[in-house]
Each structure stands twice: as C-alpha cells, then as structure tokens.
Length: 250
Image 1: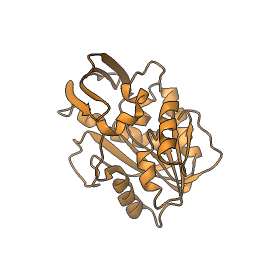
Image 2: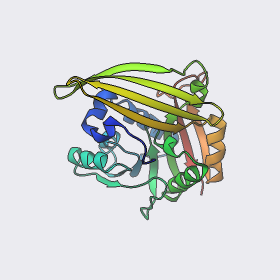
Image 3: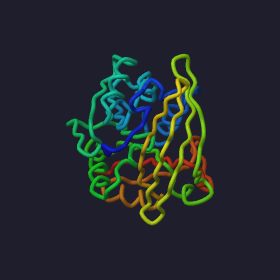
Image 4: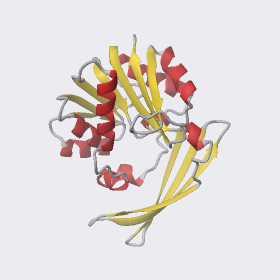
C-alpha cells in the first residue's frame, strides 16, 4: 500500500465494519463453500493477507484453530488483536512478507491485492502468496472486477453514511477510471456530524480474468474458477467483485 493512501476507516478501524457490514457472515460463508467444493478436507491452517479488522478470520477460526492475519496498517492489527486474542495478528507488507511456513489456505480479501500498482509490486505480492503455499494449497482472492468497471458497473459517484452511537457521518465517493492504465482512483469526502470534514484518497490497479489467470500461472498456481458472486454461480460476469480460486502446484 502506498504511503499516500488516506482512508478515515484505516485511522478509525472500529468504523470499518459499520460501513461494510456482513450481518450473515457472508465472506466466511463463501469461504466455507469454496473449501467444501475445492478441498478434499477442511483446511488446518489459514493465512489472511490484508486481514483488516480480522472479522473474516475470527469466523474462520471457529473451525480452523491455526489462523494468522497480516495487515500493512498497525492500527488495524492493534484493533484486530483486541477482538481475538487467540489469533496471531501481525503487521506486514504483502510485497515482502515471509513467515517461514506454508498454509493450507491463503486468502486476501477487500481488494487488498489491487494496492499492488506497479508491475514489480504485483510480482512481489504473487511471490508472497506462492512462498506461503505448499502443493495443494488453495489461494482465494477477491478484488474489484475490471469487466464490470469498464462497463455498466462503473459508478462515478456513490453516496452513503455511517451511523453509530459514537460516530455519525455522510460520505460522497467520486471515482475516476484510467482505462488505458487500468487504474481506478477514488476520492471520498466525509461530512461528520460535528461539522468537520475528512477526505480519503485511494488508487487501485484493475485486473481482468484472463490477465490474473496468466499471472498466477507464472507463479505455479492453477486457477480453478473465477466468479462474480459469493454464491459461486456461473454468470455473465458483470458483478462488481471478482472471486479467484486457485490451486498451488509448486
């Protein structure tokens, strides 16, 4: 993640789950469907790269005791530690992370991979995924779907709000798409109930299905499936998020 990235929710991790609620444990439920479909037995170890608040890992930990969460942001990791003392959380850069061990499953959600902007960053991040896998490990990524972003799924402006007992604010997110460079830029302006304002700045590198398939293949992964929905249904691939499922061959 580039040091120029600004995000109010990264500074206030306790608000993150209010803006992106999952009342029915949607992401971990999707993971369990993936494990049942593509693994011969339940995973015994899971690594979450870009774990954020640790919400997904807290759920997956119920059936997999050996879980490790890594995030670039110290404030996210400190918050995650307060929510689950029996999970190992640590600060790390997805481009250089080396834990010295392999896992049955490596996951990276919330478009964390898209913070790898330059080709060198992409290569180094894919190396990180590979070095933490053994033959037969499953890699599960989710990221913004470039197919949708280049079509009717692109929204130049999105408005919303966060409302808790401790914090109330409205936001306007403005998006700019550089189609030639496959870059998406977001500027989000917050209007907080106390009258103050704050702004976020993020940049994402977008990927198309065949592109990510080729890049993973170069690192020893065989892409099993790519979906645009959490139900893992075949579709016209117009959903906003792309879910990539790959097996590490070594």
